[in-house]
Length: 323
Ligand code: UDP
Image (cartoon, rainbow, N blue to C red):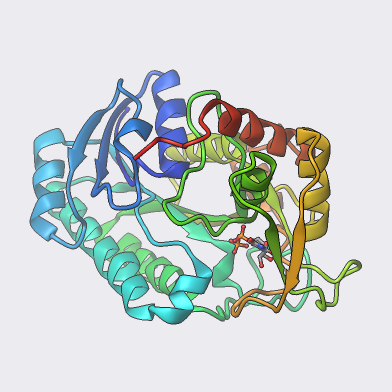
């Protein structure tokens, strides 16, 4: 298929692009390169530099390339930042996304795969978090993604725009060529690995008084290749739907740090800090629906091999993409 990928120069987008190309799809990357990196764009893909805030940028790109499907990764995705600057999240994630959908409708492209998030749920009443739970986000990031999910439902009904929304839990890991390099790194695993590389003195733990066995937050870390696999399967379905996407395992912040120490063979200095606003205590995916309806099954379930792949990439690319 011919697929346009927004945010294809970012962490998750770049690896999905690589996997799409490996599966012989034709890929066009649309990215404004504010968060993404030119070097993260697989050279086999065409790169169009443009901004979703400008409707004409994306409409021109769709008009020119006429893809059969769009995968939409371009977004802001930091809980903490969204609590300080909600406007950025509603503008980029809702308004930017609307420009994309309207340009798709105008140019006749009706297949869409959306990067949604478990942050649309907020603190769950029970675990694991399956698709039947109520969505009550507790930060503007989660709210912006939920708003866009609701938009999708109506574009499906009114414009026959078929979508698959994948609600990611915590994406982690790397492939041989592409990995995680945010200009301001807030994520746990890359920050711990920076300590192991000697680029940071210590890692901070945000909150040790949560109601979890070791007092730190529990997340469901999913390998980026398993996540990419879900996107491939999403391309193959004709039905619209929402799917939660994680391994179903829970790993605490302290367990992640311990796994990083084992994988790197280096000790990690830790400083315990207060909770980060907007963080729920436990997020674990119920992925029965995507397993049964799309046939997805994760290859990586333990945290060590996920961390190992990230570590290998960071050792090979200590300065990330270097821009
Ligand atoms: N976290 C931490 N120290 C850090 C970064 C993150 O303790 O330097 C915690 C964070 O509070 C959360 C978990 O690690 O409980 C995962 O955070 P991350 O930012 O990686 O992903 P999120 O769950 O926010 O998408």
